[in-house]
Length: 294
Image (tube, rainbow, N blue to C red):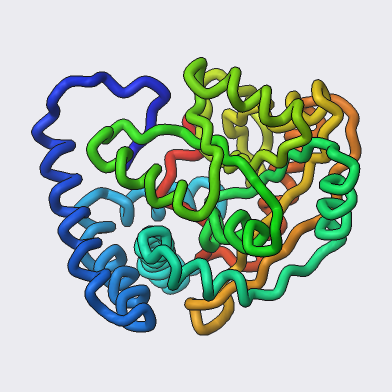
């Protein structure tokens, strides 16, 4: 499920079939109780979809690049655990109220929670940054359950058939949502200027980004989150939702705001922050992405 900013509005048989298969899988899983469907979707991704889609090979390649000393037994485990987390995340996003209720009951920790409450009281904008880690939308859902209205910036998927209902699934947990690119930029800026809180997932390869270190290697990274924080005097706050050992519940961490300096330094700080978090829970980051395309 690769992503791009401008999906061509033409019929693509491969994309249509991919969407039909995934939509059918999701529909069937939604018939099962939540406690069964989430781990089952994880296993389907780990043992069926990941090998067929090339995710297993990509995980191995990424780990060989940045963690060359990782024992092969651990690499093999990661090749199952990482897509398991991806599969769980996808079906959770389609589980609507069941997922919302579970995440709403999750504890929220970190100095950033008080900073968010103060920003809301003062009408100060916030840029909330996370990565494809754990369930990357769970922190937004948890904060929305506490009364925070957090908009989301997202990259539309190249498979427009899947993208349509995936965005609708995200919107169930709160709006507004803004697609990357000109289409959503003006609305996003108006929202931020009004004192809005904007969630950004910032850990994918960005062709127009700048090379920033991530796990010791250059990774093309967007400066947008830091630039928005500087331009609109917004708080820049990292937040993550870490799966607990039962892999159904989460620990939500909202860190202290990062100090303003310049966009490059702030973006590198975000990368460092995410890397430190990933190193504590290696199998919860989406190693299926082509993060290091220089």
